Amino acid sequence: MLRSTFKILFYVNKGKEKDGIVPVMGRITINGTQSQFSCKHSIPLEMWDVKGNCAKGRSKESLQINRDLDNIKAQIIKHYQHLSDREAFVTAEMVRNSFQGFGSEYETLLSAFDKDIASLKKRVGKDRVASTLWAMQRSRNDVAEFIQSRYRRTDMSMLELTPEFIKDFAAYLSTDRGLANGTIWQRCMWLKGVVMRAHYNGKIPRNPFAQFHISPNCKEREYLTEEELRTVITHEFEDANLAFVRDIFVFTAMTALSFVDVKELTTDDIVDVNGDKWIISKRHKTGVPFQVKLMDIPLQIIERYKHLQEDKLVFGKMNYWSMCKKLKKVISACGIEKQISYHCGRHSYATMALSNGIPIESVSRVLGHTNIVTTQIYAKLTTQKLNKDLTMLDDKLNKTFGNIKIA
Image 1 (cartoon, rainbow, N blue to C red):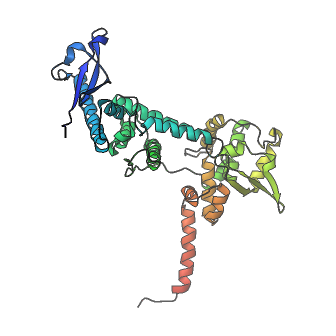
Image 2: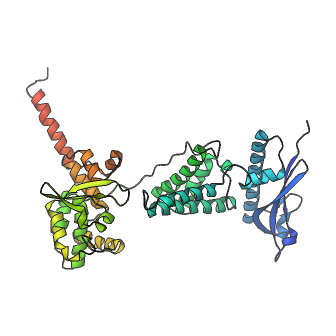
Image 3: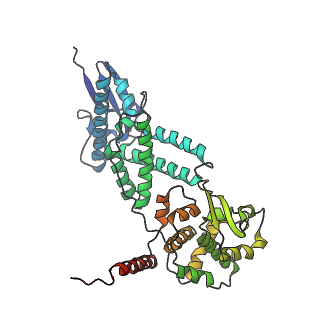
């Protein structure tokens, strides 16, 4: 058997010198076959050590270039070993293509991301919303920036991925980008999902991120207590615009509708059931049906703004962002020091309902959830609820053990 020859050489291309700066190139040689590639680096000609095939000196720039070249060499060796294990004959071009993520049956990371994004785009407006697509695209762009920053490349093969890649990506988002932990978790989960799907579809032989886990460590969701909600309801506003913003928030807190569901609420969605008014519709976000009985306060709010009804919209046309800004003024004017958004209305509804003994299955139906686990996220075990439950237990146990004396 002939002995296989394998060599990696780094050099500078003097033919492309510009103002004394030359590009750094690489050359793979295997059994007489050769293949060149760009190392995505440029260097002053006088800094290049021809004999050592590396940058001269101990400057920060030289050290960084040499570290990157060492990394490139290690990656090429890994690809060569992988190809040698499954191919009878390996050429320099095959190794280069594998290193760059092209010319094999395996996908590159960003191309896999792009395929998943294209697939998700077709679902927007059906069972996914535009913000979900935006979040995935943002994650894809962050991965691309990380690859460029860390590896000086525009893409990389799935075969190159290791458990350290996603750990380094999370660290990059924290240190270089300064993102919060919840955002880092979201970005990493999109990345993990893309690689997982590629593995399940047989594009890569293993899932390098299977054991990776990061806690979202998200902030506790804010909500208003019954007393705080009473304060908001009874506060008198001289500004009619602020009163309207307050009333829409109260409507969300008394019906569990999200802002977009209130915005799209039509008169056709309000129906009579056994003499009572109900909202029966589907959630904008998921298309899941929900139904909720209208209490007196929501009915008052609907009646108050009948003059705004246009094209069957119960509250006319509303702008989410302008109303969010005004909502902060509303909450502050009521003396409440909480970061409240319109979505907190749903949290408040779920908390009040569960605290007053409404079964979680019923609350889940009102919220339009497909999984009770989602409803449990909204559920807050308030002191009021805990006191009520423990008092009930105390009463029952006293009947059983009340007349017993300890021996």
